[in-house]
Length: 100
Image 1: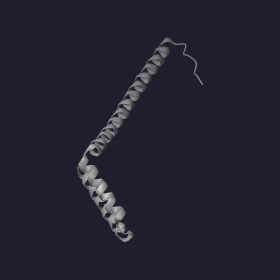
Image 2: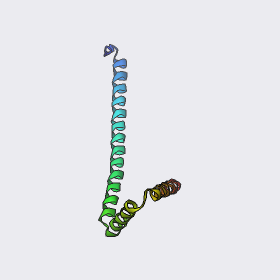
Image 3: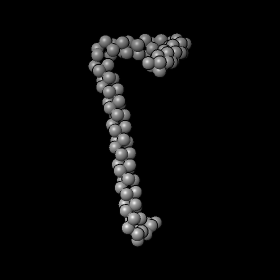
Image 4: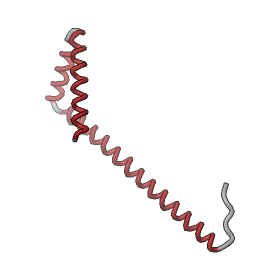
């Protein structure tokens, strides 16, 4: 519901100032949200570029391929040990990253 326009000039001026202030605040909020979204997109872009760099390195590809081959060739009892080791390594990496 749109309120009626005030008849008194002072009230109209006050209403105009309030609307201009609200418009300015909304514009600032949209700008902040856009910058935040841009920063998030930049972070993901950097992550994607890092993964692409890793995948283009022949040593990384060989290490991952060799690890996958060893994992596939190992018996199921050793796979459980591998997953536990991988979970511990991931937990340590997350703890290291959180301390930085």
